[in-house]
Image (cartoon, rainbow, N blue to C red; front, top):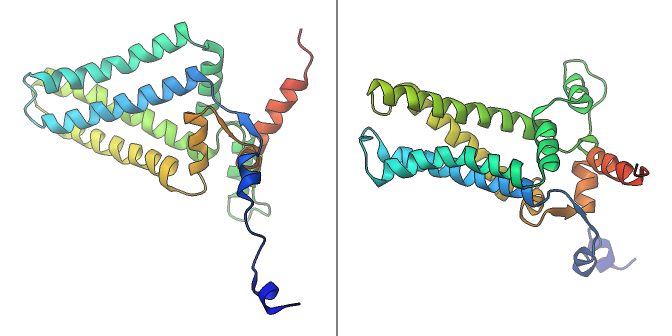
Length: 222
């Protein structure tokens, strides 16, 4: 064996093969709209709220702040009524419920567990995505509730409201980091931009979802 061959750690990546790799559908237009609409308006509400500070008497900034909060609900209702209701409700169900794979992951990570739960067994969403979705939803709800309470009491921003805003911003930052920066989860962004992901990535990170999806496609239509 030549010295050059001995130094080669691995086979070079075939970028042509990657470009020709099969893609699988992950999210439709309705799910993507609901995601981007919610994330962008939550960010708008948080940023305009910070810009307001204690001065929340009126003006265009307050209008933008309140309008962003109201439009979150309006957009989601329109997505349910005018979009693919079944797809949106299915994705929401899988995101906010715990399935047998999540329970197996918890059992596998208990002290003394003998078997680790591999990531390729996950369904449509993994436990980390579900925990973040729950935490962010609760934080945004807390922001809205404490904001209304502070406004009614005439307390300006309010300590509870400010704390809720801080928590929501940290969680939203975690979501952006996982979607854009973290190498292992960054490929998932294609699902929310293009509606599809590479099959190899889906097999590695959401093999259970991919298996269920292909099994459903093979079922005879009634």
